[in-house]
Image 1 (spheres, rainbow, N blue to C red):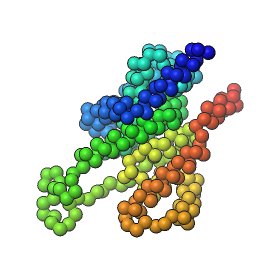
Image 2: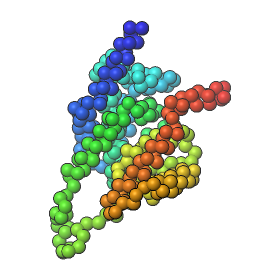
Image 3: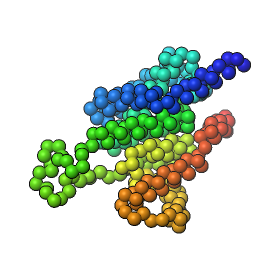
Length: 288
């Protein structure tokens, strides 16, 4: 009993520490350096992250593969990881996870080929992967949100000043007209109809953490299977009945992002991750 209480205490202390701005800044700075500053492009970040997943991510789950390296760590669930007595080992695992998150943010920022992007999304959407256990844990939501904001702030810092010349003198000869344009097409990872509930949940979470520039009504609808498209259109109709139309483009864009966020959130609530383990067990028993 005392040992169990001690484990719970360690886990609670660890999560509390992760919610501290100083801790989040420490992880974000190191993760950003690994996946943005020390690699040439998003595809290089993916290759680096894949090695981390292969060589350093611990196993989290009940059925350990026979060839798994025990030195990487074996935990029955995320709570056991959080209560790890070896604080350095626990922190190193979280650092690996932060780098994986940063890699996903680098992929979302691009540029990256469609095939490389889809491969990374597929790699992060495996039901039987330890990464899935961390991705499903709402206790890490604050940390993930801090990483997203850290990257967004870095982008704001590096953006050219309004009205300033573009790199390489690109503003020359364009007096009185726009100084730049964007050929970017918003895109979200596609949700295939055959995905299981756990995979759909993780993909919805991926959409949540995508950059705002990727989130539009059109990109969301293009990424969804037919049943989600029907639910989305119904949601828009119901929302339009109560929403006061925005007066300007900025307000309309904010309404668009809010609608997308609320729809994704409501969809995630229908896919309770606590039920996934029960479903997996039931399917396994049927198979037997």
